[in-house]
Image (cartoon, rainbow, N blue to C red):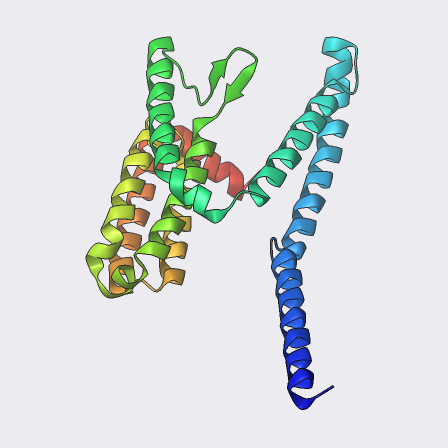
Length: 240
């Protein structure tokens, strides 16, 4: 082979190696393997605990010791299928429909409040035939997707201007009001802490955090004090 052909062959071989390496790395990085094994471990422990705790109740109520274990296994299978769909859905697709997801979550939270008000009791679920939906869970997913997309698109604005974080903060305030109206303080705390963590990792200015953190802690303490059952839950946590 001539030097030119040798160089051309080496160039083509090198390009193929780079492409193969990139494809292998991209496939490997589709998900965090360590996180996956941790999740599978937690699911396994939870399944064993549910099965063990529910066997006497299943026998007493339905004469089937594995009734609740079968339901739990079904939910695990559905979750696994949904995780495969999520893994194979492009990020651009999530970004395209995130506004719709957020709007649907807010509407479902409003519907939950209306239903619970009309029935004069606390209710966190919406029942549609055999399907039960907990809007608080969907709201957390949609909000975190929205916040991730916002931080990517407005990275410079978030890092340099205080007003860059005002839009996500206003969205979380709206969702927090709807969650507290159910009431669901736990989901509100998760949204608040996760939002601050994501904003901090995105490089937002530090001085707004002091005001937001102090305000959030003050409101959480106030919400705990005005509801006696929340104080009881807190005390039972310290002294079970």
